[in-house]
Image (tube, rainbow, N blue to C red; front, side, top):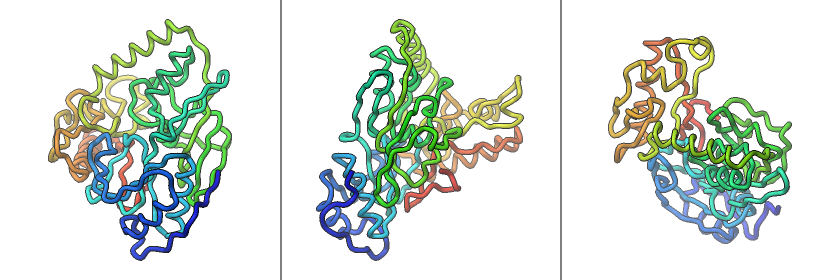
Length: 333
């Protein structure tokens, strides 16, 4: 994949992708669309986020070109999939936002291996592969988010995660150069891939054949559980807190998951502004209408304080809190 496009991008004073000169130069280099002052709430499952310059790549090469252009100009960038599991700032981003979606949503089969584009919705990948009689991705049928974001964050549910099926990953680094990583080169851990500073373009997964009736039954059960037990009828990011490790997780009685600990602290229905701890599932914070990132962060902090005071457990966010330059706040990666 070519990492350089025609034209040059001059270094921009202030190091912000919001500079119109940067946007004009970028338009000359990418085949996709460049939008200035685009509300990021449109790209967030929380429906929260201020304005930014957003590039909508038409091809994988556009991602390399956009990152290369930002690197040359000294401008930070931030890759965004379907916008789940992130809390974007109210003031927007100075970073260039690279939104991975159509154009990077390939789905191809080669025997037991499937190639998945980063912009492909994970639930769609789950249904398509399960419909062909393959298990492994079917656990993601009710989980919002893209393939690229799921791999990058090593998302998981129902006892499975991306690390269990990945064979190799194509990534673009912070200078715009692409490379292919085998599974052994990716340092997956719980809810992390170790791919900091890279954008996932494509992943190849190895799945196992399974009986269609069994897959259909499992998918129906998981989807029904999601519909009944989680508040996906309201804007949210998915699970807010990681399940804790240590004594609270190892105990066999009493609250042990993040949601159980929040519920045991009596916090269901607690609000800060228009952000609310869901009465349906305590590990979800929902936007009841007009919530801000400040509301959500304030509620996260309140929950952390009260759970720690009651149970002696410090809950760590699973949702990624994003700063103005696209950085993960609080050292999260």
